[in-house]
Length: 252
Image (tube, rainbow, N blue to C red; front, side):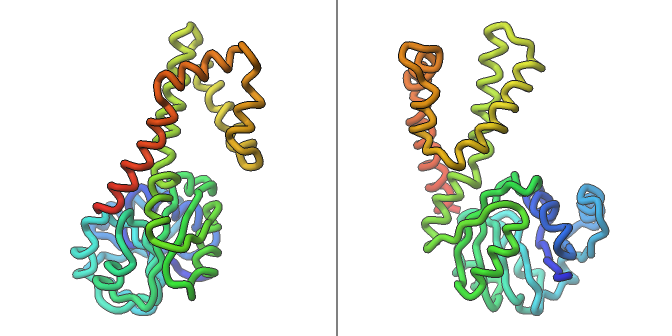
């Protein structure tokens, strides 16, 4: 079984590790042994734990999961040249990864938190020689899409990487709307979760506009609710959210 070495032990690393643990040996590099122990407990399997100051990355396959601002600091603590670095850092270019970590190859990846249940939408770009390996690796946590440029990946970061937070806001707001009209909170949450579960399947094969038209009958309840969303500029706000998140990714 191949070994994947995680650099960092935060929430994203844990989410991805949960998707990979049945297919790969997991090694985790961090600064605090107690946090590495907690990571192991959360993951539910034995892992190799290494303190950052003691780590040599020669010929390792790395999955970089630290904060973008910490790349230089982390790189300075490690020795050697990795075989390949798969980085999930938003806004951190291939050039910067190679400059500070000096790997033989680098691939940028943008998964999301759905990795923990094997349903991530992960976009990828970087050294073409590692395209097939990257897709095999990341398909263990969901779907993948190889993109032709880092600009496209930064846009995808704003869409799929940040998307769970946007959808969580919408989900909470819809449930709040049902509670406001008199539905019990527990029933509203159950109904909302069923809605999202089914919608996630049907949107795979139907264009959003066609789906909307199929639900919206003339003068009906959906049309009334949809008009309220348009009054609230929900469409424009979603487009602006992607724009703002993309611009922030380029600033990191």
